[in-house]
Image (tube, rainbow, N blue to C red):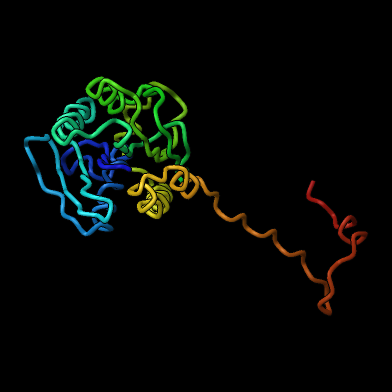
Length: 219
């Protein structure tokens, strides 16, 4: 089961609504779902909440060390409560996925994400779970730093929030340790929109295939 849920981000009101704080947004919503309150705990260098669930106690964590030192906070709490890497889920912004996309995976590299990089180093293992919240890519590598520290337009923020809502539906599976069920729920594709109906002619009849093909096209 997941015993420690971590959301990556940067502290301070100037960063609250920036793309890099997508992990924080997830933890805030999860805290509401579990009816717990996050409060600062200097021993773990972050905002922490404990939730008592039928599966046992779990912890929620928002590191307040700034992104580059996220692992300092994660490892401090994990070591104290003897939480193994495979019992940790880290929610973070993902450049390689579009807004509106979300994936769950275990292990792998950090792909240049500084929060994951430090978490790797401090835990001494990449075997924790990651909830990857797509934020899109600016298209140019040199613009990444500025891009992640900007607020997304409202249309993109809504897509990210929809992904968080979707991930929250897998909370019970994550708590019970049914990672296959959690993965299937999070990865389930949205229902495809139905194709538009063909236009109707006068009298309420649909055009025949010949009439459709004879419709003039814009040149």
